[in-house]
Length: 95
Image 1 (cartoon, rainbow, N blue to C red):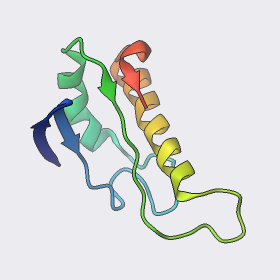
Image 2 (cartoon, one colour; image 1 turned 45 degrees about the vertical axis):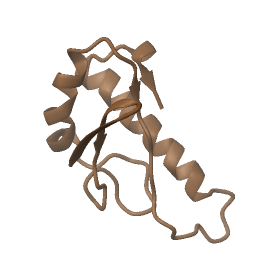
Image 3 (cartoon, rainbow, N blue to C red; image 1 turned 30 degrees about the horizontal axis):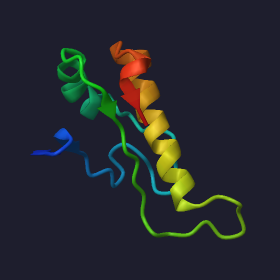
């Protein structure tokens, strides 16, 4: 995990190589180990929470699905987890 401040505010980066997602998947692995550390702190602030999804450059052959789609689905999966299991209001979450 990497913490830094920029023009957006506090930025928390999680290297997700098999930490949150398996390669090519938008289904969360056992994310509680990572999210249980940062989510309670995020929940204490009133700020909007921007959730960015990232992926690798391995293409999806023969499918009408791209790495951009995968990035978006990963962001949505993390946002849903933060709402469902950590009580962060959906109007604060911006995937």
